[in-house]
Length: 253
Ligand SMILES: NC(=O)c1ccc[n+]([C@@H]2O[C@H](COP(=O)([O-])OP(=O)(O)OC[C@H]3O[C@@H](n4cnc5c(N)ncnc54)[C@H](O)[C@@H]3O)[C@@H](O)[C@H]2O)c1
Image 1 (cartoon, protein in one colour):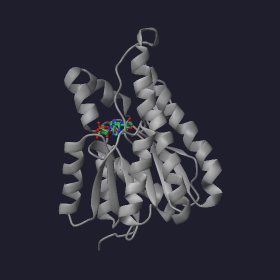
Image 2: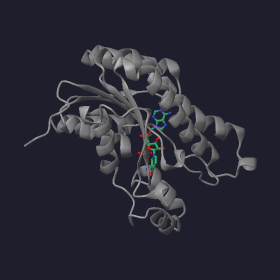
Image 3: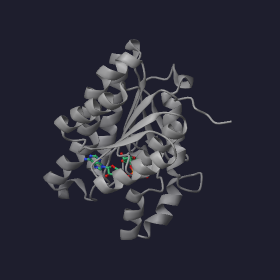
Image 4: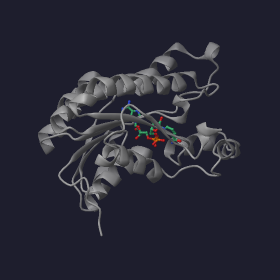
């Protein structure tokens, strides 16, 4: 029997042109939601939205840089204009960031990563919340296992993901009583383009990554998506402001 628990609902997912975001948008669509795929990669974003439409669901792609407030505000308005409401938002867009020890980190690189990964989540919530208050829906922000522990040579990425957790907790306190359920996920390593790129530059990383996950493998993006949809569902109605590890035991070690 098909599970259409998100029928008549509308979900916006940033960074949905590939990887974890695409898996989340696809799963929302499979469960009945109309989905807006927000990303700055036009070709991949259009293909991703088309593939969801080909599966029989309603999906649109919106070209947006999540670090640009005007573009984020416009993306949210376009979703509401097209679908009439917004029930769920997943602020997920991200970049891997260059690897440098702190003293060698170029200032521009620090600002680029913080702008996309932390300010991008802030801007998303700023413009999504007024609509989601009306539908009493949910927001999930993608942090990382590296939002809970440190990671050498990735100070900007690590700081941004710790920041996403603080932002998520503050927003959960502000809007939980108004019916907007706000949480974060902390994925371990998932098999996505971001990880494939890192592995192609440093193949020796594969063994290190496996060793970091006590479960003995890295995740498939769909396993992360399942946790996000659970947090959006009524099954998680008393879960607020959490940083949920979905990481094969990475932070349990
Ligand atoms: N893959 C992992 O192992 C892993 C682990 C923990 C956390 N995460 C987090 O999960 C999220 C998704 O990562 P992924 O692995 O699916 O990566 P990915 O590279 O496959 O997808 C990221 C998407 O974000 C988009 N994006 C990047 N910058 C953007 C911007 N400024 N505006 C709009 N879109 C932008 C990209 O175009 C891409 O489609 C990221 O926040 C990442 O930090 C990933």
